[in-house]
Amino acid sequence: MDYLLINGGPRLRGTIEVNGAKNAALPIMAASILCESETVLHGVPDLADVRHLSLLLSKLGVNVRRDDRGDLHLQVEDEMNSHAEYELVRKMRASICVMGPLLAKRKSARIAMPGGCAIGDRPINLHVEGMQSLGAEVDLVGGDMHLRAKRLTGTEMFLGGPFGSTVLGTANVTMAACLAEGSTAIESAACEPEIVDLAEFLNKCGARIQGHGTPRITIDGVSRLSGCEHTVIPDRIEASTFIIAAAITNGEVRLRNCRLEHMLAVVDRLRQIGVNIEKENDEVVVSSARRLDPVDVTTQPFPGFPTDLQAQITALLCLADGNSTVTEKIFPDRFLHVAELNRMGARLRKEGPTVIVEGVKRLIGAPVMASDLRASAALVLAGLIAKGQTRVNRVYHIDRGYEAIERKLALLGADIQRLSE
Ligand code: EPU
Image (cartoon, rainbow, N blue to C red; front, side, top):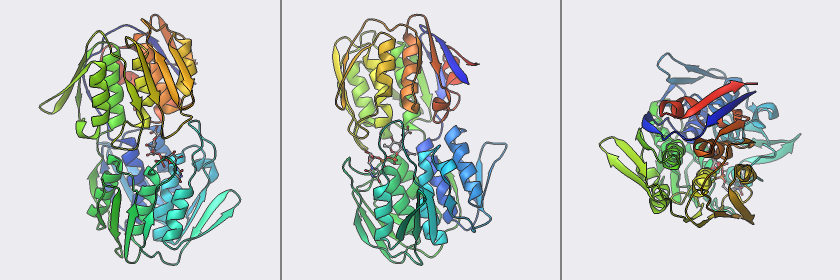
C-alpha cells in the first residue's frame, strides 16, 4: 500500500495547472449513456474515481477510451445491461449518477444501494423520490433499487432535504427529465458550478434546460440527445487545496485554470485569515501573511463554503493566532481528520457538528491516516508545515480526488515522496 512521506518546512513557490473538476466530470461521463453518438471530454482528470466510473460504464455497454492527448471518448455500444452492481457501487458512491440516464434511456435502472460511507450517513431517498415524481416504479430487490418506467412524464417537484439541496440528486433528475415527455421543474435544485457544467453539456447535446445555477431548474423534454465535445470546468476544490498549501507554508503560488468566481466563499474566508489572493491576467496569485487570523467557518451548499474544503481549512486554522470555529452543515459527521490532526499537536475539540480550533505555534510530524479523501488532503497540508516527518497512510483515498498530488506539491518545492510498503 502506498504512503506519502513529507518533511515539513519548505515554502511553496511556483506555478501549477488546476485539473478539470472530478465532481463535474463524473455526472457528465454518466450522461453519455443518454447520447446516441460519441462524446469527447477535455480536461477529465486521471483519478481513481474516474477510472472506477469508466469501468462501471463499460459494464453498462459504454466504450470509454482515453486518447494520447488525454481526452476521454465515450460511446454507447450496447444497451442490454442496466444493472450497476454492488461490487462497483459500494466502492464509489458517485456510481449512483448512472440512475437517471439508465432509467430515461433504457427504461430500467437497477442500482445497488451504496451502503455506509466514511463521512456519514448518505441516503439516496431524494434521488428515488425524484424518479418516482417522473413516473418511475421502484422496488427494493436484494439490496438494489430497481426503477422502471415505460415512459417518464415531466412534472414540478421539490428536491430539498434536511440538509438543503442534493448535488447528485439534482444531476440525476435533470438527466432523466431531459428525455421525459413535457416539462419538469426542480425546486430547491443544487446551484453548484458542477451542476451548471452538466446542464451546459446536456444543452450542447440537444437538451433544453434553463435556470441551472439557480434553485429552480426547468427542463423541456426532447426525444433524443446526441453526443458532443465539452471541456470540464476547473476543479475548485483542488484549486482551493493548493491555495491553502501556499498559505500554510507562507509561500507564493500561481494557479492556472482557476475560476475564482466559483470560489468566492472560500476566497472570502481565506482573505479574512490573511491570505492574499489576486487575479493577474489568466493566473491566480496566492501569498500569505506570516500571521494567520482566526475565523469562523460554516459549510453550506453553493455559493456557501464547501464541505469538501472543511478539513483543509481546519488544517490551516490550526496555526492561526487565536480560536476559530468550523461548523459542518452538510455532513455533520465529516470529522475524520480531527483526531489525526490532534496527533500532530493541533488543539481541536469537537462539539456536535462544530470543531473549536485553538491555534498553536507549530504542528509536529507523525504517522497519520484518514479514511476520507478530503480529510487525507488536510493531513498532507498539515504535513507540509509540521516540524519533522509526517507519514500519511492510505494514500488511495487522496488518489480518488487529486491527480498525483505529490508531484504537483514537489513541483512547488515541497519535500514529499510517494513510497510503497
Ligand atoms: N441527502 C439526503 N438525501 C438524498 C441525498 C442527499 O438527505 O437522497 C443529504 C446528504 O445526506 C447530505 C446533503 O443531502 O446531508 C447533501 O448531499 P448531496 O446529495 O449534495 O451529496 P452528493 O451529491 O452525494 C456531492 C459530491 C460530494 C460533496 C457533496 C456536497 C460528487 C461526486 N460528490 O455528493 O463530494 O461533498 O456533493 O457538496 O459530486 C468529495 O468530492 O470529496 C465529495 C464527497
